[in-house]
Image (cartoon, rainbow, N blue to C red; front, side):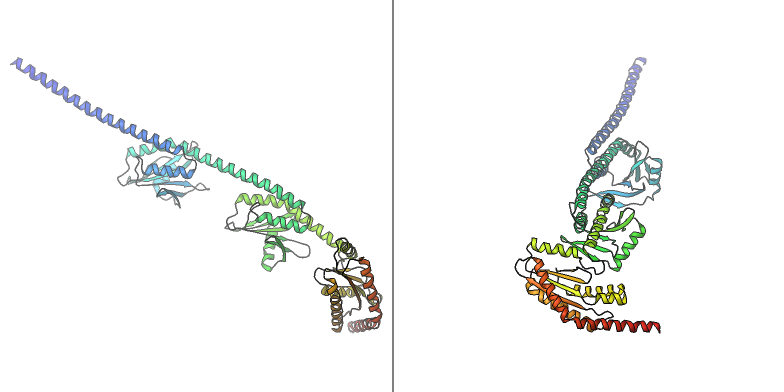
Length: 511
């Protein structure tokens, strides 16, 4: 009996050992399966990590990142990246649609997302269907927040795998962002260097311009040319002593106009502000130009897109470098005006008149003609009523002469009571018409009963062929004296009328 029990016991022991081995084999298979899963996950993470290393821009980075999370082993139903704005508020949401990155506004409201940002760790929603996982830099700053959803639920293994992936890729993300920022900074430096070179040449061209109008033309061309700033429209408001001017370009032609009320208001506003002003959409800019601490002009820029901060900065440098050029050439123009104009009548003076006579001969500007005018009774007016009345007498005569002077002709005061008009080109045909027109204007003016009747003798002469211009002047002067002898009686009557009128006015004042 005992011999029979021994084999049964031995069999039972073998069966127990076999069951134990089978259990160990199941456990080993499960362990192998888990190891395989871990290996697969790590292989997947290695592949996905390498997948984003080749990205050159942040757009490529987030496109690849969102693609990896929505497929390739993670298989989330919805993924998004939340980024901080310039104020470090998480307001920018990136999603992927048909392989394209989309950007939208985002409001940080959900509690689990706020908790993830605060704790700097992955946090699931209460129903375990959503997760927020922050991407944290070495300095402990949250660079981005990954949002993911899975309708089947997010388990511990999912969070663990996502956490490993984010940790592995955080440095890569940072490197790509920094590399792109560096590249953008280098591009900006390159553009600024190009602009500084441009500013050097255009500033030199403006300073080397021969006259005031060339300076304004070069200035406006720089503002609007693609080789300059490339703005859509540039306007210069020049604050001259007498009245402001508006300078614009029409094609290649410089236009100078008076300011309207709206433009005057703009100028007053910028003078009061003493600093540039830019519209909310950054498409309209007003900037003052200062010379020796005074605002001498204002730039107005209108653009078809937003004016960038670096453009404003370069424009400020340009304005600072060139404001003196406008002021200096305007002063030079004013001095030239004074040197060639008579202050009382605003006509040209004798120096300019003689320069034009020389130019006729040197440049062969024939036919040429000259009208000579001499005032009658100026000495009597000065002696009787004083030099103020004499100045009124001269100014009234100058206005008549200016009105009668044809376009492109030169009218000048060549003596105390003498005037000359030079006409070139078609002078042979128009000199007589111009002289007769002046006589008609004179008669009409005196017939109107002015306070100061104008007595004036007029003569003219012309030559179609080259001759010494002084000979033309002598002929015109001789005709003027013949006219004076004929008009002596009329001139005396004008002076008597003036005396009578002024005596009457004086009596009225006494009464």
